[in-house]
Length: 635
Image (cartoon, rainbow, N blue to C red; front, side):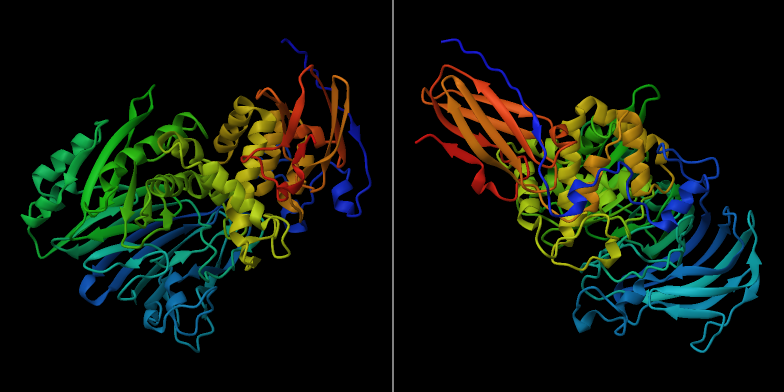
């Protein structure tokens, strides 16, 4: 039997006791320190960098040695720092990340006393030829936990440069570490490891936020020339390009490495058999591995005398033929290791051609599998991953950490303040790939449920509350699941094509720079051709939660009128399923734009000749913190 469906709706305004829910001002709240950057022309309200945009950078030349038997790192570096700001600098702020392992350090979580190592030991600090007093009583250099405050002998003028030399060392815990470390049996991932000049920017001046364990990256784009010395049987993988592969590898390994650079299929560059037969590295007591990385925000490396290495590659720029090497480093007996290089390849393919649809910008991605059960940590071109037991979690982890190469590294995000600007994207992007490879897992359902559980709880903070101040049980909600759900709702709101266009434009405008949340908001507004403040405010600025409910249903002959009430302040799309006694169903969908000028109710009229059995509001992929009011059944 044929039937006619018509959907008519109108908005009924209702009063809400919380004034922020009824706010009509289309402009977003901008803190004064951020506002000054826009008012001075450094950034534009259309989402583009201003004519006066600037950022500082450095050149690092580092010689470092890993001493596996003592779990020590020792090195020396020369840093050339370029002051591209309009300000004269009277001091530097340097980061000594491994001071977090001092017994007296302030940390965001407790650690076992056996992990205390004493932190970073500086042997000297020289600036422009002047040796500075680095003693505890020094008035020139003051150690504030993981920050080192250095008074400059002479101010560094705008456009000027300075040269900094230092020699340093630190001991890693014998087993593990925070985000990096010694994983036992000769397997190491080294990050947060060298004295680093902090960011001086247009919003806060010097970044004074301490590294206490939770907050992560905010770094300048710099150039690195790094020599890494390790015992002879150790292999090193690192950010950037190896410069002396023929000097440190045996010829057959070099041949396989070069083969992988042009191969769609996985090449077993280093195998367990190669290790056993000493057919991997040059036969020396020590080897020095030379890497160069240009215009990157950080540098990390991994070293192992045991691990195997698989790699493939993929073309990301058909017009130039440029390819990206997708590598996996780990034990062959990890049950998913054999497909890791191809999962990395699928990740690069998706991100280069689907979302964000911007070609992967670097030469390689290397995933190192440590001995932890799960979890991971990103660094530019490198990932330090655990070994999840389930395949969906394995795929999601590999994708998530590689996605970070775009956010926060290629995009230069300050995730110390805005962790959602990278963790949200890294949680959003893997869904379609995981679902394609593991259709029974339902990645998105788990992400939605994670957000629903925490949304609107007393301790749940909006993403725009600066990340370093979030120490609640639900901090992962603000960093990961809430923004990931917001991005997906935004994609449904704008449509995939427009969403992709706006996202790609955001990446194009702000790669190799330091975007703020407002640069993201304003770019999407600009590309979409509308003010999306009504969406940005509740999802990113306000306390609240998503909750749609069926308020009332009236059946008058062939006409069914359903009143949908928006109880929560977070706007989501509407999906209503009409189920009939003959077993058929029909679905009505409305965009979240329905709520643009309303915080109230929507009446949906549906005409049919069929007998109604049930009305179901929403689905498992639309966040809704109270699903008890989502079903209407005919008695």
